[in-house]
Length: 290
Length: 238
Image 1 (cartoon, rainbow over the protein chains, first blue to last red):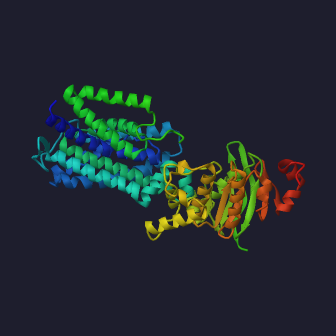
Image 2 (tube, one colour):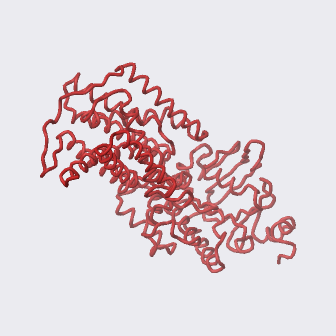
Image 3 (cartoon, chains in turn red, purple):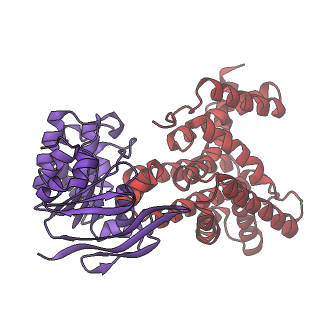
């Protein structure tokens, strides 16, 4: 492998990894703060992708504007679902809550399939052309995805690490009872976390629509990798999720080139298996009970 | 003295278990009330009802004449009920300072709040550990951190659940002295199994058994109560 090719694959991997990181950040936030494994997360990615597709093709709005619009739509939908459905399942056995999010996923998939059929869709509006840096060629759309992911990812981490609401979320992730005893409004903090996470998923969907085709399962497929990323990074660890997403993106890029996409997936799950055996709490996660 | 806490005929049932049976108590401003009894007496359940972790099955709880019976725990904390837990529950992944900061109501700015957190840590002797992870503290320090977190709420009422458990003799003596000093800032209910030492700092005490109050009064009254002596202090207690 030549060095320019190595750099090219690394760049491709970074783009996929960055996108995966945004989705995984949301999964980690919901799991860490709300203590829910959200099987419907992929459908929120699909929501953002179709919403952007509609505003671009029907309203002639730039897909770049579609990204914040998708975020706001996702956050509003997420807040509604947390308040109306997920919070009402709180305190019930974990399997019940899992079934609630699984049902939401099936319902979402059904709605998207019914409304948009199974067709693969795309649009040509938005940034076009290529950007060349030395021997590395990157499409402007991919570069946009990388930059937006960087901004959104850093912004999210800053909110979680540097603000009072972020401190409340981190406290809540450690002990619900202690958080309540400290006067932290637990239902409001959970609502904020769920809305932020779903907003991130929808924004990721908008980015997916920029560089790929859109179909009802587009988010579902992406979120499977996001779950792997969250487990690899350490359940609930935001830093671990970002690290693992970048790693998976890069491994996928190299494996897909050297072998094919099927092997990339096989290797991803072998990595998951090895991590669970050797480091059950993930790359940056803490031991259970620590 | 004005009333800080009033509990009226509080009951708590968990299925077939009647954990708290008709407990009534009143606590005045600046008073330190000891709450004693064997394991399973219902002390922690009563604490959890006062703090809002469990809603009472029936009865009424008032904080400074305000009915808080149906209010959630976070709202009671904001209303001025600070508590510690029997088994320490720090935010282990946060720093010691962040643990306290999390309990300070957002005020004029994070900078001021951080200064306030450091003041509170100084008061409990944990300032040198401010930037350490809470999970790295010793048990004695964790107990102080929980007290610091409760103080960050500027409480009217402090509920201290077995703060002396697991401490060395010198840590126990230090913490009891510190708790006595807290009376100037808040009314306190203190649960502990170290009855003889704890009674030394209490203004009044009540003793529970099987979910009900079996004795109440001054520390001397409690010490002299034959039932309490037999059950909790031992027949040979002086």
